[in-house]
Amino acid sequence: MNTPIINLDLSEQAPHSPRERIGGFAIACRAADKCRASLAGKLGEYHYDCPLDNQLFSFKDITSEQFTAAVKAAKNYDEIGTWLLANGTAKTGPEIEDWSDDQEGGSPMKNPEKREHFIESCHRLGLNPDKTTTFDWLEADDRFSFRTASE
Image (tube, rainbow, N blue to C red; front, top):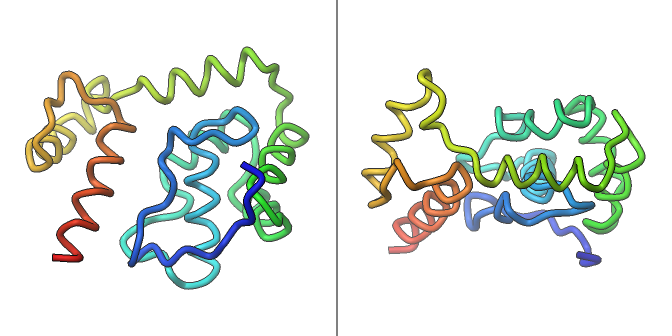
């Protein structure tokens, strides 16, 4: 993904899917989009340094401030991936792939504190919560939010 990073207005469009990987890391591309939008004052309803972003930060043992500095310095998404590979706790390719796959397959249904909200949100979006992953839910919510915003 050697495309230049642009400042997205997240009140007008969704960030990248959390499935989009840079440096092999799920969540990273979406976190970078939200970070850049936050810096530009264009986050809309999104949140940077949220629990999802913190899954990545915890896995790499980095802070949101460190990630923000890397995103500010990066000219393209690949540079962020390179930075993630070089900073924080070292991870092997298989560790990154396993973690990213686990993130992609995870669901709030497994968390008693988040289950009720997730079920309600899935029903609002026409999703079956028993078969919906966190990433499925986020993508559906992105589509729903911008479909209704443009109607």
